[in-house]
Length: 469
Image 1 (cartoon, rainbow, N blue to C red):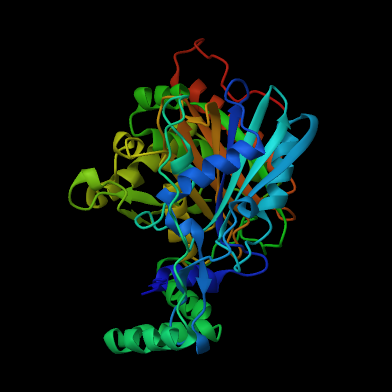
Image 2 (cartoon, rainbow, N blue to C red):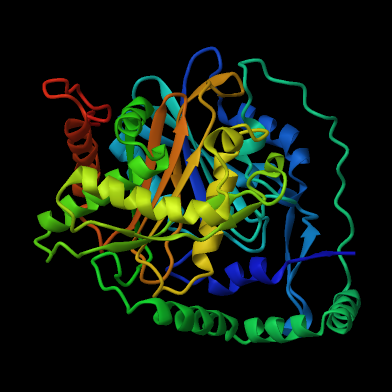
């Protein structure tokens, strides 16, 4: 029997539009050397490992008349080389050129006639580096039956482990009669499911979801108008920032809270400086409401990340004192933690494989299901392993999340900590944020300001990230 998409998974298909492709991405940098990966080796690596994620060999099949949600069926024409693509920068390729390429690629929606993922090998990056860029539709990754492709191609050592024997053959897809019969059977077993499917089929599921969430959000607060609440176009800008994890930990040691609190305080300070640089009105009471998805424990903590909940946080961008900004954020997150039991960093980083890409996707799924009125900015922060990882023998140097934009959300920020650093990926609408580089510098300065405020006088050191491309 075909595997039917859940109502939540289907919603990401209905919510997708020309300006809001609903895929999550990841940009990872690698060092060339003995473990250099060319296109042929990458295709083989993914072909060998794709058995661990069978969803990546399946495509969508619509039910006639939209009587039920679509189903996953094996792609009888599956060709891994279609999904694994190659690009190159003019040597020597700078990080700015790489980010421009990433922005163009993530702007394009995935083709629903094929399995909903792509991987790009980008060669020619200065410093003898190459990059892997992944795009995976949110309808695919639920963290249970399917995880991100990045989790199966990365390893803890430079030795490439033996892949299982390739025995896969596509199963025959259901006939039209079987699809209709399955939809009718589901309607009898779950009578409410057919209503949602029909609404999605005629284009009203998106509005229904938005109306419900908007009603809840309106009861909490009025609509927040900031430069981040702009109409989203088809084109993107992408920027990256590297910070030292030890710098964030130092602030935590001096002032308490968590590393996540410090990261959020850095973002609040960066947004404040960016808004002032734009000559926006910033008063002492100005806030930017952010959606900060958090993995929470349900039952046994060994099942960490089995649930991701939405946490709405008012970033105090109007507060001029960086320490007070941190204290206010810490107070709000502590109140949430009293009831939600968030998963600790060590538990999340200890998940099998490289879990951050999957957890970022789960966080983005939470954000896409809320009304545009509920928040102005999405921030996902996922701790990763603090030891090196490898792909095909090449050492991974950095991992930048790429969180999709939804309607009237012109910016998203993803953070991943890995091997002693915190890597930020900023995905923005091209027209709404032409000054994205100003925001990046403001974030860098915000961490320096926070370190200055908590360190003993005269003890300031250089802050990582003061590197230009």
